[in-house]
Length: 122
Length: 122
DNA sequence: CTGAATCCGACGGGATACTG
DNA sequence: CAGTATCCCGTCGGATTCAG
Image 1: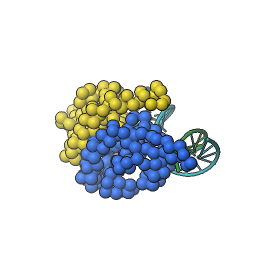
Image 2: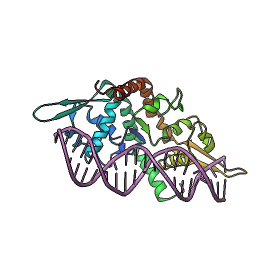
Image 3: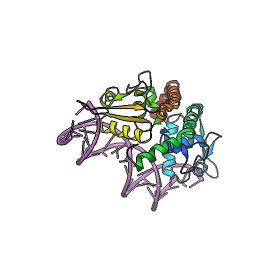
Image 4: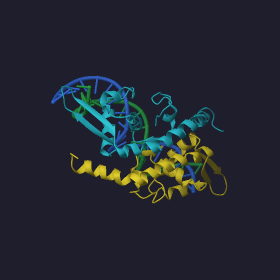
């Protein structure tokens, strides 16, 4: 799952990691919420390319599992915010370990893939 | 991903974790190889219910990414062994962190799920 | 703005049968 | 023993459209 260097870069090292948090977007969402509550639209910015459907689904799953909390502010304009629960924040710990691994080893990963892609026989 | 307590128990806490290693079986396979090389058939035992197809696929992916190594011993009976590469072993570190998280928080996870399953409105 | 509904192609993964 | 081949269905996730 994406992390810090260029968390949302399409060629982000962490995206190569065999370690994943939930579905395709869950890890990134959690990271996005690390610094505080975010609105639906705000989340769509860093998660370039995510569709409303995909975002909604990931959000629902995360919410169901008690990792994030959804707050709907009814006002002149509709406003919904999502934020990490304590449980969700506790997840940051292992995520960090996973991210660190990815950052340290993604080149080896790529090397191995290229080696098996190009020439069989190592 | 499954881990120690009852790594392959269908209700294993770690299986509830949002943190996953590769595909459905990859994490378990890596853990199975933690203590040394294992044969194809040997892997199928703890991975109760895995089909040859699924095992082969996971193994190939792991191999492609340089996490495990495949050795084919041609002899009277065919024998193929798989073992972790140094890169694969390095993955055990973050996996352990993920497993620890699952062991500590799976009850909260379940609570949250049941709460949202049974009664909307928390 | 925050979704829900629908359509659709790609992939995952189980069952079963077959092979060297 | 160690796979491969085929079928099949459920889910993932993107695109598009509609609604409160």
